Length: 500
Image 1 (cartoon, rainbow, N blue to C red):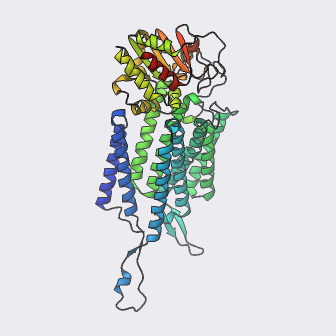
Image 2 (image 1 turned 120 degrees about the horizontal axis):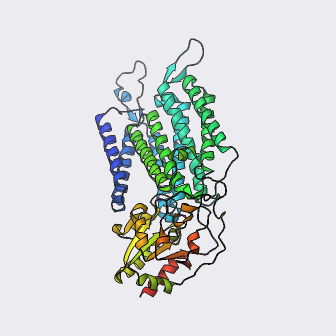
Image 3 (image 1 turned 90 degrees about the vertical axis):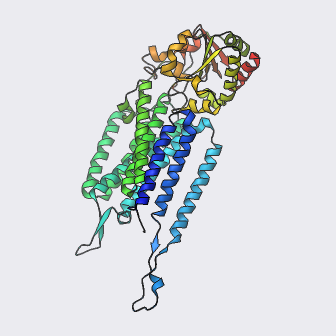
């Protein structure tokens, strides 16, 4: 292999890529700059990939035959194009799959797509680790020892053993955990917690086993220890995510994102790739910070997120069934009249809006209300939808003014002075039971105080279903709540017509 990793130009290229990644994260922190952030991230990744390929081009140096004269051209290095073509073909195939997926995927399926991508990052880390373990000399992480008797063998550097086993373990946990998250988000598996008997004891035992065999690999380079760590890491990733319920899934997606970053960083050390280390560290730390922020927003323990099963409780609230109590039904005309006469309307979007793709007609409704002199605001819960920022992205797609969009802590005090709260498909994040029912799976999670508004208009397909957390919303049965039962997009279109 021909490598010029010590070249100042290579170091400079990786530095530029790292700066692009940092600026990308900065840009993604606000919808107004998110497009620029995405472009900077793409540019940084392009620079890193091209630099890595160029610095690892295989070169062949032909050996001159003994006694050869006048054959100097034979000794000139030349590129081995076979692996280069194979790498470029793999990149092209991946690009086609990625572009096709990006063009076809619906915004409602974005959370499970993100979980699937995390699983691929974890699996890639495991495969790189396995390749490095099987042929460490090719990765430059081992010394070849030739004994007096027997075949030469590779002794992996001890620091490389630490990097290798950490990368494989974190990657395996990320892969299996992300697969379960994908299945839950995709409704292939029930979103309800699956509680195994003695699950905490099992998880602790698995963690201790991983630590024990990881030390064994570090001390002896034992193949058995390596494969046992890999197997147990796959299993514990499954066990950590299965007990987590749907209400806490956005935090799971964020935490798995962090895991994928740390797995990539560990493999970056194994490969000696600066860009991979920087990128993985950025993803890992930003994902962990986001998870911490979301845990605070949901009144969850950050440590319990890492331990797994933090959203799992036995029983809970309504037991997953709608409450049979009196409720009031309204029409599009009723909703239009109430909002037209209001001084302030606060719109609360949720996953139901995403499913119906109602964000564009919702913005049209808001524009109509503004024409009638009504103040319109949007209230966003940190975990509305099924991944962080889900609602913000949808509203930005519909060109909703950023100044009209408020987070929970900035908008909650306004509900007491709000004439109409217009809830479109948001269930768990508006459920007052989170503040009063200690048996509820969402108890302790800060929610939007929509019940304090003069009137609550709640769009829902039917009264038979429950939210993603599996509990009914007692807000439906309040005296100041009017239920608008219909497809979200169709109902908002009818309200727009009624507004004139």
